[in-house]
Every structure is written in structure tokens, then in C-alpha cells.
Amino acid sequence: MQDFSQASGVLSINLNNLEENYKIFQDKISASCAVAGVVKANAYGLGFQPVVEKLTELGCPQFFVATLEEALQLREFNKKTPVAVLGGLYHGSENDYAAQNITPVLNSINDLNRWQNLCLNKDKALSAILHVDTAMNRLGLSMDEADNLTSNLDQLNGVNVQIIMTHFACADEKDHPLTQIQADRFAAIAAQFETVFPNVQKSLANSSGLFRSNDYHHDMVRPGYALYGGNPTPETDNPMQRVVDLAVRVLQIRDCKKGETIGYGAGHKFTQDTKTATIALGYADGFLRTHSGNGQLYWQGQACPVLGRVSMDAVTIDLSRIDGAQPVQGDMIEILGPNQSVDDIAHAAGTIGYEILTSLGTRYKREYV
Ligand SMILES: Cc1ncc(COP(=O)(O)O)c(C=O)c1O
Image (cartoon, rainbow, N blue to C red; front, top):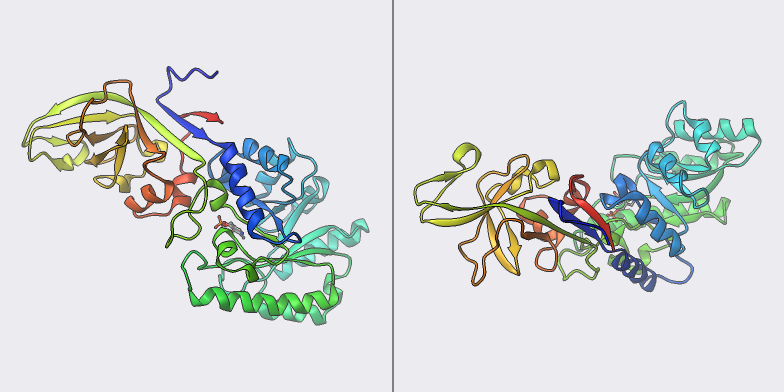
């Protein structure tokens, strides 16, 4: 049993629900499709090693990270599972990928040329993932470059193109027209590659894409956000299980008088006498400054609005709407839990749940259930 008596906050990661979420994906796809795990940015803030280990236990066949450093970190405790670096093939680090069996996601012809040189020098067809940009204009070969490759096969000679992929820009928005346009572009270019590389796997869908159409599943889906409990289809109830709970401690209870103000910038003025709680949660803990005066936290299922500005280590909430027993110093206030999802709190701060998760602070005590 962990001792939380001195913790200012407790962040609970429910690995059983993470498992449930992984199974929800598996139930949605066909037997020939694989579910990769996107575990970049410390597994979206939830903790890299515990999440990777859980997914490995579940048979996850492929991990995606953003940077070479993240892939090297994974290799410290997992030597086997394929891991791919979405950020591409870093200049001058080509040998580090090969030495640690790390797959580059080739985002340009230059990436491809350098990987091919390495393969030819080593006389070994090393795995690579080819990323084709179908609308994001962020990373990846253009459609024309990809098209040219299929008629200039010398450029691919010696390289084991294991997967061809692209990434949706708008799949979280129901019926966004760009989603189908991207899916069509991807299907066309992937079909061209398949004529030359019959075994190449195709990967298109992120969390939202996975739920939008079975046609987007292809050979491998790449969910991140929904795995961690975020809602992949924001226009409907969340089909995923909650993975993250967060509760923080009350530092002080105060009786504020009508006409007084609270916090930096005197951001809120009381129009009546109000009981407040100052709690151990600030922007240094990932509670964004845009929560100032926005949204609410929960005491035993009852909403307590945020008052005034969020400061570095503290924020104040209004206890005046609480019916029944009030919290006292040392009690825990719910930030994320049964009453408030990651998506809810993100909405209140005018952001997305991805930012909430990846901003989760380091001062909380973490427990893995
Ligand atoms: C290329 C790529 N694939 C998959 C994902 C996972 O996306 P999501 O977290 O929306 O499921 C990401 C995340 O940004 C990504 O960049």
C-alpha cells in the first residue's frame, strides 16, 4: 500500500480500464487488423513504462513515439516490440536507429535516401515506415513524391518498407469532408504500393478515425487519446473507460466577505459573503491558467466553481453551493473522476483533452491501479 498522507495530490491511472479500452478497439476491428499503441509524450502524460508494459502484456504489436529519445527510452526496458519514431529519421543518428532496432517513419525523400544508404552499406533491408501526407501539410512525402516512387523503384531498393501510413487532420469532427478525401487519397496511393510490395501494411486511423468507419481500419490502427480514456467521437457519449483520476488537497478554508476580491489581479469580486477553499493545484501542476474563473471542481459529487485566477501552486473554489458537510483542510477535491472527464475540464478551459493529459504535473503522487 502506498502512503498518500503527505501527497498534495493523487493521480490514479487505471491500467485495467486501459486494458478495457484496448479491447474495445480490438472488438471494433477485424482479425487481420492490428492495434498499435501511440505512447509518445510519456504515454500522453500517464507514464511511459507502466503503459508500455501493460500494452506489451496485451500483445500490442507496434509502438509509435514522437522522438528518437523516446524510442531509446522504450528500448531500455523493452528490447523486442517494434517501435517507430513519428518525427522521422534524425540527421546523423541513422546508426542509432539501426543499433537499437528502431524503425524510422520516413517523412521525406531525404529521410528515405539516408535510410537506403544505411541499408545498402549494411547490406541489410532494415524496416521503415513510409509516411504519405494526404492533407495535413505537416510531415510526410507529398502525394506526387509517393506516386513517383512507385515508378522509380531504385529509390526503395534495399529498404524494407513495412508500413505505409498517413494521418487524419479532422477525424474528430463528425462527417468532416476532409476525412473521406484523405481516406480516398490514401487508398489510391497504398494500392499503387501494394502492386510493387504485396506485403506492405497500410495504416490510417487514429482514435477518432477508428470509430468513424471500418473502411479506415486497413491493417493497423494507431489510437492514442481514446486509449487513455478521451472521447474519440465528441458529438456522442464517450465509448471509452475512464483511465485517469486526479484529486488534490484542500490547503485552507476561508470566509470571504462581500466586496472583497480574491487572488492575483483581484480577478474575482464577491457579491456576497462566500466560503472558499484554496486547493493545492496550480498551473505548475498542469491546471491551465485559462481555467481562471472557468469551470468547476467537485467535492463529494457537488460542483464548486473556480474563482479568480489560477496561480502557480494554488487555486480557489467556491463552496457556497455545497449542500451538507463541507470539506475541511486536508480533504481531497476531485479534479478528474466520475463527475468530470478530461474532455469536460478541457472544454471549460477552451482547450482539448490532449493538452490536459500531456500537461499533468509531476508533483502529484502517482498510483497505478
Ligand atoms: C501520426 C499519428 N498517428 C496517430 C496518432 C494518435 O492520435 P490520437 O491520439 O488522436 O488517437 C498521432 C497523434 O497525434 C499521430 O501523430
